[in-house]
Length: 395
Image (cartoon, rainbow, N blue to C red; front, top):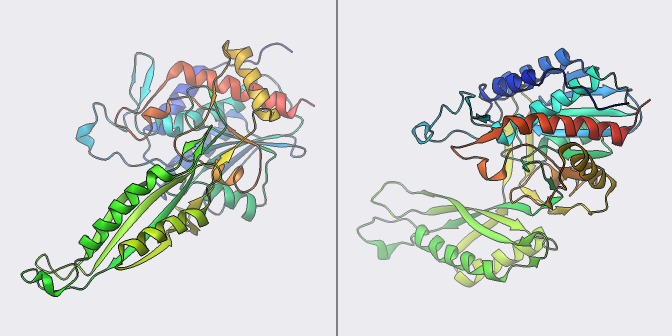
């Protein structure tokens, strides 16, 4: 059989535009979920359904045999200050072959390409020997791995391979560092601000802890592939009876990135040593994520996610590299993401072979210049379609 047919690439672009133009903050993905399911039906997916959590799952294949998951999240972060954008963040503007807007790179462009990989397979008359699943998940931005864990553990749909469509600039990612969100609560003793010597200022106590945490960074482990672990205080809040009273409580949120070989137990022990050294009255715990999906389904998870690395000789990765070279004409760079993805669960917990491939550049994610090249959307769709044929075979 010759090259796979892509009869209507303009429809892919129009669909990507439609997704970008539809706001979908975490837990508010309902409208995008409806668009995704509708488009899957339109292009000819054999089965489309929405699970209890609101994840959209489309299948093309024989409903039996090996399963290949294309994983993409429907939610985006917010736009921040609209005045900081040169273009309407929800305008889906196309200029000089580039689609701009919130979610263009992270990762509605990839979702559109995944759906239209299905269109390519249908138009080409391909009957797969297994099943390709395109999965649009909810709430990935605040809690990566949460939704795909639900699909595998609660819905009972476990893939043999996973491709994550987060932006890689059409290269391949094979892992990233882990992530833990810690919460430190420092207790002080309130008094009138005119006589601070009578109390204990929780902010001052927290400031000493913050300096101690900053000094930790140079002692973290280094991995030849994933790099060094890191730590950052990302949010501070206080409680006091008024602005002329000393705060009796100060809460810090800490983002700790784990390189290979680092564990939650190690990270906890490091921070506990800082708390003990700086004295004061402070508690430490791993943050809990709790929310309700747009379907009304309650979810919760500890904010602790392991690092993961897929071996370079993994057949999924080797096959993807071959597809990229054959279709796009270059040998792909094999690298890693700086940020965290659903791979923390699929690879890090479930042990499923996982790689990343998507249109768009990582540097544009979460920025006011978020964008993706139109030609890369089409290239990604072709690669996704061909990979499905090579991994699942034909009947």
